[in-house]
Image 1 (cartoon, rainbow, N blue to C red):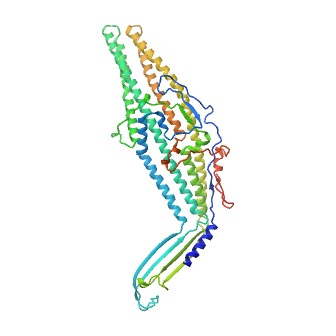
Image 2 (image 1 turned 135 degrees about the horizontal axis):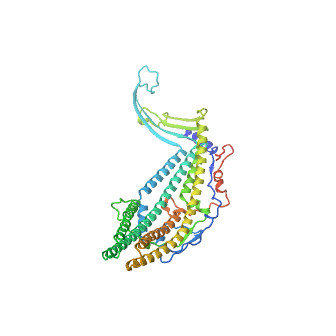
Image 3 (image 1 turned 180 degrees about the vertical axis):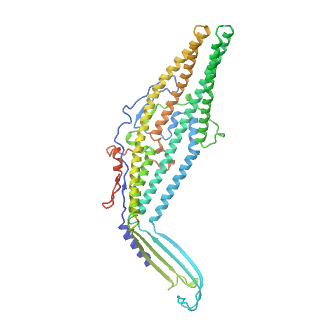
Length: 524
């Protein structure tokens, strides 16, 4: 056992003198901004007696529910999203990728401990009588040999090569985790958007069918008037053309509706031909009226894509330490202890034991500049990750700003679309009466029909935009993933990283610090 004690003493000495080269990662501070847009809205415009026309109020600093889609108060939508989160193939892929990344990091952690192996060999051999090789003490040239032994090997992490490797792999696992969370948030948003789009197309088809019916009735009126000589054949032909043109808009709308049905089926993990398409209606959806608006200081902690970019930055930082440690000496310790005997019953008896202790020191001297350039490449990769992180943060703020602008302007757009729809309905009704009574020309009716059709479609699209904008806001603010412990590990609400730290422009320079005076971190 003396060899084991000797090896243990050496390990303790090396552990006490170990260090970790390379930069220590520090989380980037939040950007020093107070608002998302130059003019932050507090309340959107309201449109009475129209689905989706309610005014929406923004509550700054309020939390985002993890099941934000329930605010639309649609049981069918809630059930569809639940099916999607449970059965979507892309989420299953992301979950498996996360398991791979975590197990890989755990496997690398095993390198911090000694490796112990046990072996037993048994052989029967014969040596020639004139051989110079040693023979057993009984001078037999034909004998059995039994050798059990235990081998211990250990590579002390003197300069932190393994610690930095584990750190990088753990950061990569975090990157995969947030990639999976982003997929979950995107999936729920896509389901809401597809449901709203389906409802919009159904309403557009209904409006078009109504217009086809109106055109058909007018065609019958014109044919009666033609029979009595009140109008010419040209007027009838024009109405026939108008009716055919309106009817021609139905197939593209029905194609788009079928595509949305297929999309909803696939998002929920079903085949398009086997899924029972849910028929959504804009009037059955409740537009959320109280909308949370996260503080800019916590947005970077809430957005999964920003957290993924941060994890990638952490992994790149650790890789600088790995590349630095590869240029330094490496020490390996080995020990063997066992017994060898010519009879199985003599194993472990006095005089049969053996042991050995060894240490190897290897230091790179010349590698053609490979290790140096690998270190430089790692630092360049870190600068690349820092730039990508900054770009992701800027895009996150842009997403929120774009969504806030859309919520404000699309509410105003719905107001005008509703007014236009009412006016178009009145104009069409009056034009039909005037043409029927002979007080107006047929071109007036055609113009009224076209205006009515476009006003109805514009109104439906304006209604759908408000629902889609609301879903987009929840996605832009992070989707509330921190309320879901199933997203990868127990969650806590993201906290502000502080508004007194370095600004976004200084992020690349603020995320690492050198742990010692001899190994400076990468300089972006």
